[in-house]
Structure formats: C-alpha cells, structure tokens
Length: 132
Image (tube, rainbow, N blue to C red):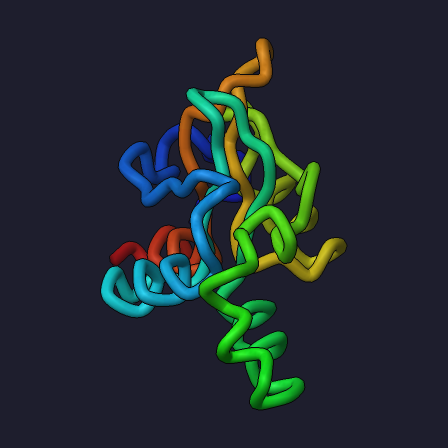
C-alpha cells in the first residue's frame, strides 16, 4: 500500500445508511443481514453519527431485559454522534492514524462542505495494503 494514496482511491461509495429514528432492533437486523459492522446514520447527505455492531451487541448483552427495549429505542439513543471523519483527499497514512487514534473500525468520508461521500473501513485499508 502506498501510504501517500488518497482515501478517495479506495473508499466505498456505496454503503448502508440508516435513519436516526429506526429502532435498534431494526438496525441490528440490517447489520446482521448486510454483514456490516458500522451503520452510517444520516439525514439526507448529512452525517449524524455512526452505530457500531459492537456497541449495539454490548448494549443488548448488558441485561437481558434490554432485548425487549430494542424495538422501542432508536438508533439515535445509542449512536456515536459527531464521529471523526476524513476528507477524500487525505492520505491512507492519515486515515490509518486517525482510526488507530480514535479506536474506530471505519471513518466516514466527507466533502469540504460536510456532505457524506463515502466510508473507509479497516478492511479497505487491509485490501490496499496487500493489493487485494
């Protein structure tokens, strides 16, 4: 992987989005069926937050009565608001550094105007590193 490659060269432009008012149960099912670990929470092309599968499962496992609440609570109740983002022009080295620094498995990619244009995941970085 060339560390000076830009994020826009490997980011995913097609990604799963969810509305903040969707139930946590619905989000879990979307993530399970889509085999994704991060759900980008949006309103239009504006990023509101990120819901990770790990955070959702940890919340569900805290106490079994939580499972009944999963249909009543919304993504907005659990998502991480204002997550760290990255520009499409940033280098992969910058992206890897930011992921490590914040402990994130993905970075939403936003334009200068703040519009969501893609997502970069750990898997994307691994594929670039090994030429896959």
